[in-house]
Amino acid sequence: MAHKYVCLDCRKAFSETTNLEVREVAICPQCSKQMVFLPHRFRPPKMTDVKK
Image 1 (cartoon, rainbow, N blue to C red):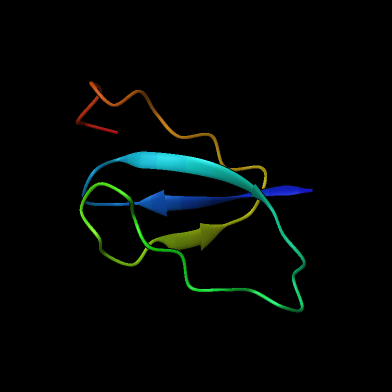
Image 2 (image 1 turned 45 degrees about the vertical axis):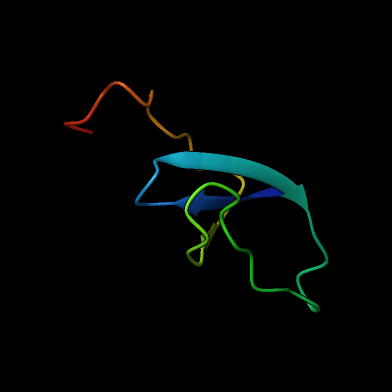
């Protein structure tokens, strides 16, 4: 399953095929902050949709 790493500051999401037993800390390539790990069912809103 492809889980998502999401940067809440940049509002970017990256899909990653991961082994849930060995999970690494993901760093955002744009702002260099730690990203949040979310389940594969998460659907990120468009970057221009600030309200969501």
